[in-house]
Length: 440
Image 1: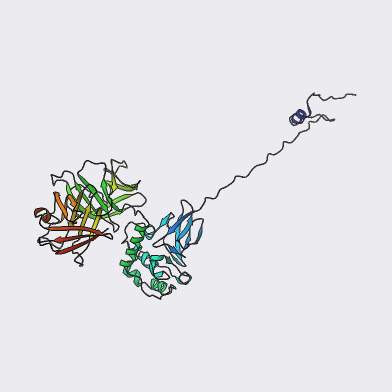
Image 2: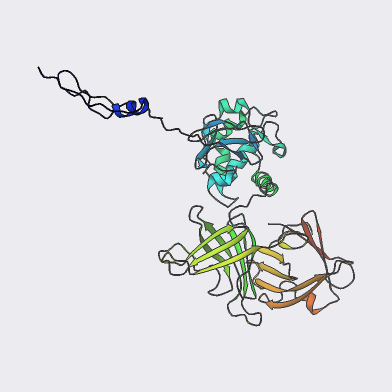
């Protein structure tokens, strides 16, 4: 009779428990005993939900309008606030009436929705008129409130229609007539009133509208290089490389478009007296030089790709022109209370004591259009404006007369963002003409 012995170990109890799991045990029939290892517990991965951000929809802040993003939805509150997650798009709606989707961000306006910097864009005009007309109490200055009645009855509309067609559209009429306003209305508010209110809100909320603004070069030896992008899709550029020469100098005035996604700018000229300089090369044809414009740290950066090969060849940096007191850009509003007939009449006063006068009048062929640049000072006691012209490309137009005859009077004052030039044309100490200018 044979007995098979198992090996023995002199180990501690704890060591034995550990070793047992890795040894083959003996049994009476000499078959090994397998010990199954324990399956480790698996902890499921945790997912985090992004913290929602808060944004505002405004013409004035719009209360009661519905919104939806990829992950969130709701109704704006009394401050026009809505919620979104980073990287989402947002669609605002009034019942069955939807606004086009746009990037969700801190502030959304009709301009964002229309993907434009031009306040005269048809979609911008139509959105502003509709929202302000639907306001419950009819006073958008205290906010815009959309009623439940409007939500229940609003019909889909096409914001891309020309403003006149939009106003006459049956769906638009039905929406505003059934809007639940305190005072019933059947017509949209005027374009002028709607855009004036929208522009005021943009200013009050310090909204930088794309590249809109007046800018002066910081990194060039050119005597003068200044550009203003207006919020109606037009621009004016002043450039004087050498004050003693009219070559490659002067102004251009035209239209521009800017691609929101790429920052590329396309420009066309209505008036051009500065030759090959300026923005006249930046068209839409294949191979045209390319211009990219963006606001970075409060400055306007213009990047130029001269041969359209995808490489930036030059970067121009502009700073914002101050707009305190008389400083900054001004556009003519009226002369003696009557609308001015010029196509463009503009003044810009710079912090270094220089100014630009720019004028374009297509209807008067006897008047020289163009720009003049010089220095100025204002007598603090009398408000009399003293002018010295450095560069003159508009002949007798502009302020030339006041440099040739010091006895003539030109007096400058600014009140409530209106710049007034009072003109004494015959040196009799009486005002013969009053010109009023407002900010662009």
